[in-house]
Amino acid sequence: MAVTMQECHKIALPVIPDGIPFPEHVSLDCTGLSNRQIENNAKRLRAAANARDWQFQP
Image (cartoon, rainbow, N blue to C red; front, side, top):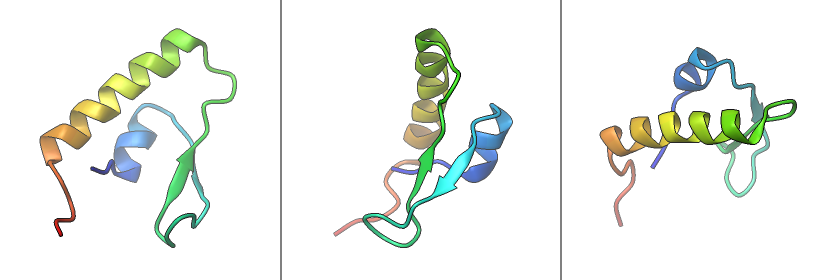
């Protein structure tokens, strides 16, 4: 499952490259957001990832 940077930017959620556990991995900065805002953003991103389906298959 994955979300795009555009999806994160659309909801004003900063993307921070961290490279762990793989070079392409990032973290999302939820600093300053209320629990409700975090939950709403998570729902939107989950819906986008589910619509895209699995990106990598064994």
